[in-house]
Image (cartoon, rainbow, N blue to C red; front, side, top):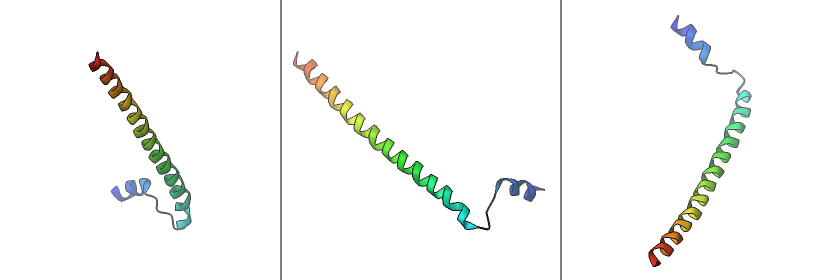
Length: 61
């Protein structure tokens, strides 16, 4: 019974070319995640510079 239930969730195609679209989409999402990560870092550094400038102005007063 357990083998039947597990076969419902696991699907390994005989024709391995069915994996190609999945790998393409995985690559697309990986690139998107990487670009988003770099964008967040870039924005974070700009915000850090703004905060440092505000701290300098505030401490000078």
